[in-house]
Image (cartoon, rainbow, N blue to C red):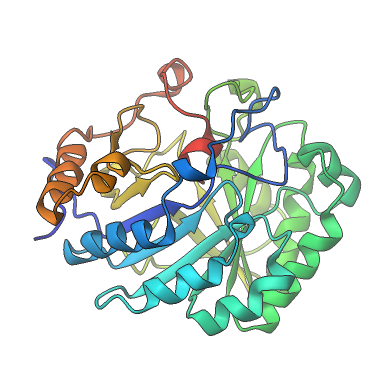
Length: 327
């Protein structure tokens, strides 16, 4: 019953957005003018999320990542983690967060059964953080990072979206952080989404970045534990952590893609960069059977392309904004 697409790729990873809301305003994720938030009644309930995830797990999904928006804005999120933790066959539950509420929730997430945490942080300077996010909350984020490490979420992953002339002067500072702390710093190539100000002039390629870092540090490639890993990882000077590169634009990893997505309002997407989606929320609320929901999942997967469009085409595709899809 594996979730196979027409190119033979096995899908065992589901990313679940629990809200489209966020307490930060990063321009690469949210249009400058904002978006119309979904009403709470439009979002899947915890019970509906549990049901959909259970069906996915029965079809072979082994890892679930909770995203947003900012997932920790969703009240009582540890409750959802505990509900999912009880699903037989689900091996890993992770979360991607901006960490503004992580100091508050790290302990309860650990008790609920969360396995892994990824924090999105694009600068180590408080003033620049305020400029990028339009919120002065760097201290809260750093407290959240410290709390997650203290709770044993090791290694902690730190996602850094690099943008030329915005934060590219901090590359070596992030690399040093990976040496000093049990943190995997992952540099992400800036990706185009609806109204996010993307241009090729802001894109910093993995190859250029690798060359820059190699002039200052000794890098040793880390053998991937799974062919579906999206990051190319390296140890740095024998430090505590590692660095990684997510090369979505210059060296895509579509051929080994193993992920599907569930949006906060109940749409299934088989590709982040494809506007196609299939809604199951209303189907569930009208009393759909498990078989009917499975059919929608497989129909979505049947339409998945061999790879996403090229850089010049992606910006033109009609798609949701990043925050509406889920990070």
